Image (cartoon, rainbow, N blue to C red; front, side, top):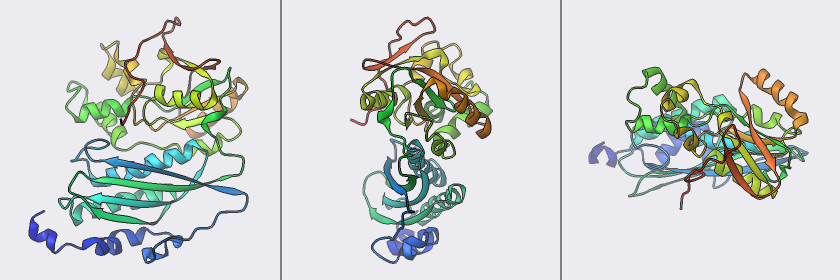
Length: 330
């Protein structure tokens, strides 16, 4: 967009009125006030989470704006699901360079609108500022959970099975495809993997239904091994994961064919946004029923143990060395 177009753009408040006010829920008061008003149902608690994404770190500069918006929202919805909460509202803060004009913001808001319908969630408010650096987008999501039904990281017990929903490693491979990797993959596989990177599927239907089933849970964002380590640290336990048990999609299996060391790296890859949880063996049947009812694979991949730390082993129980357990920001 040229300088003249930027000068006659909608501006901060024009963008709010045109693109974001239509997304506001009742508590957002039309985005006309400095804060929102929300009610909490009797016997419930609010669950609040925030995530930020940065251009060039969490998404690519040429990613479609609507998919950027939806990934930002869905990453937060995944956090709510990981505590067994139902999504309600969100707040949005953006720091955008001048090069991202009104057209970009319009497409970004359209992505939010689409997923508001998909997940029955509404905007309450937020903030927008300019930056000379890369775009930074922050979203705070609010959900609700019945008192005592929340699922935390700290409840895993020795003997629990470790389960994960969906498949692991697709997002990592999708990012590699977007960067030019795996050129020999069939187009259908390249599309499937890149979509998993750009548009994760938060398990909002599964999370609340694991109340009373899972002892501990979180979502896989930084990498399965690293995130399982957070459960172990909070629960004062250890864990063993069997590499061959990790669920890979057909596209991922074709991508890693001929690369025997790659599956171990996928165990440490991030951006999957699948639910990782610990449950006692007597919950096996309940987990199986949920998988069938939701049409969602849920795979047992290991065991919670006494001790500390996470071990990755092969089918024979031999340790597998992994250079890093997951993504680290610092």
